[in-house]
Image (cartoon, rainbow, N blue to C red; front, side, top):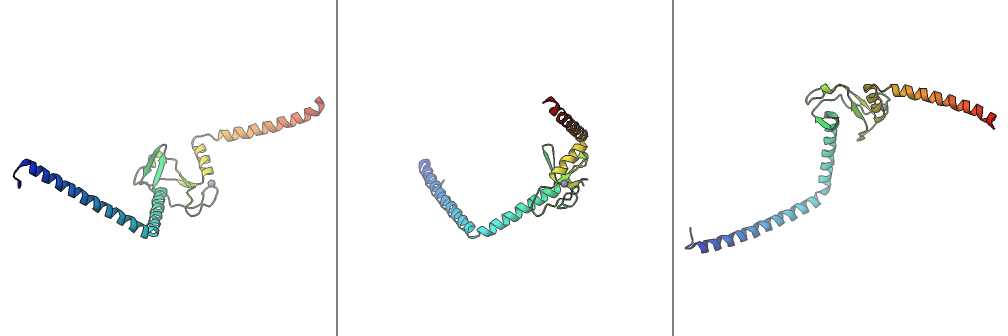
Length: 164
Ligand SMILES: [Zn+2]
């Protein structure tokens, strides 16, 4: 202990900590304002970099991530992105993310594994899911119902003048 008494030492420590704190505070402020100025100066550069990263991340997700239910599984390998729907041929260019990777085998979906699938648009994806859920009878039922209604309306039209 370089000081003669405990009190003196305490006082010294207190003063020293105060100075240190002020010093670091100043350093921090300097650093902060320096970074702010630096950012302002290189704003466009940062914006371009962030955009590039954002696109790269999105691209990675598109090629390597699949969502099953609520779970997002990353690191899988899809077939190369086509840019058009492989069922109806609709083209989606550039950063448009409206194409989905339709897959039919959940046991395929593991990191590092290839996943069998096709690139489809939203509309066709719904059809694919209907086929997988064996719900195509709904379409047949709709067509049948439509035919029935058309016939019914015709009958009503025929009946109407007679009633009046
Ligand atoms: Zn389609």
